[in-house]
Length: 262
Length: 255
Image (cartoon, rainbow over all chains, first blue to last red; front, side, top):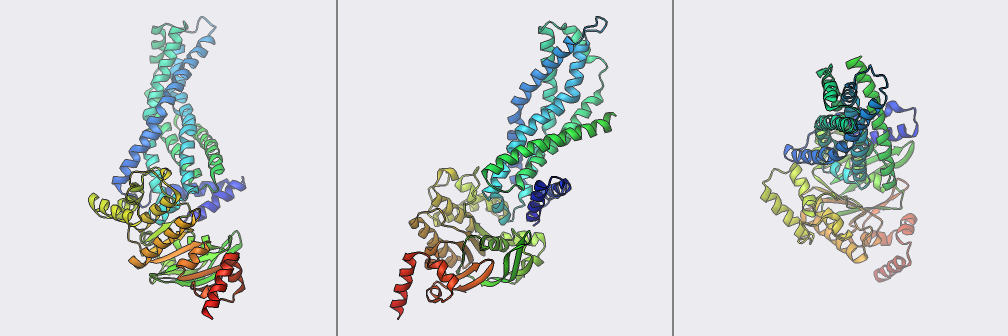
């Protein structure tokens, strides 16, 4: 049992902002513990299905809504900034595709998910901590980290499907805004979509989304699991978790882009 | 039986437990009492393995907890039942789901056998009609009884209760105390109760350990507590006028 040591480490790191290394260390130990002493498959299966429903299907509405309008805005912004008649109108479709596939679908959606799913994960696990439900699991001999966090990690591996939907809807939003806004013809837009298409960019985007999915599942879990205090602290932990999840996503986005496209 | 020897625990350099040694006997309701901040909760969490003591040993029927592997510690914990102060029921599960949970996790039984066992323990705690209700839909006393049912469903060797009757009316508190004592005797388990409640001390205190500032100040039975000349125990137990009078009457009757 290391969790009381981890709580101390986490608290120390929270009180002394320079001590980030301690937090990273306790986060790494937490991730290792998640994969130890697995829960019975029969129970785990139902937990995973529930988390897929809560985390993925429950987020599709907001993902579709945001992607549609972001795609539309990208198309309009691109069209409004093309003042030179020598620049072909198919650039609108091209720019929409590139922006949506490379950044907006995987990264922007992940930041939204860090807010929606991340705060849900932190507050639900944090509430279990303050109401001693996690202690109850530990006393029963259950590996509470495996029971609580592992299903979320597995569920979030379905996140690339949500990102694929975000890509499709984003481009659809761009097409609707471009064509029905009178900025481009449908033929020009579709030509731009097909122009210099590099399939590896989609692979890059999916790889990023898998990494972000792991971050969205584990960083908020860490903040919920090791939190101390009462109801007010649950709210604070959810806010801190959103900030840190976003920071980690943005840093990893830079690192992965440099590694895979640089 | 649980034997505790020279248990020490400090947080951030401040000692909370200072060399506690005692024995909690099988088939008896063992009570830990003391003022807030005396170290009761830390002591109980050490017994449960939720906090690792700095030094000292806790021995469960000959097995020293700190010498067990993490897997053996988890196996041992499956022999423990715990009733938390706030009940700690899983909000997302029904009463039946909560009681069934340890069986689903660890028991090698068929679904119908598990169902029978859940029925039996819910009847034992007088909650035969609450199967499908959620914790938020039942009273505090009923939640405590569900917590007791969940704690005993695996036939534990050790039962720990952290202030089991806090927040309950006196009548329900007595029912909970009696239920715990009956279960302790019926299944011959080692029960350790952390309490502030003087009614519990008088009613079911077959062995009482009084903690003060992290030290075991006194131990004895509920009968010994009437006769004790330990000032700290007297000040704590007889802080109310009612209990002072009860003690006086007891001593007069005895004389």
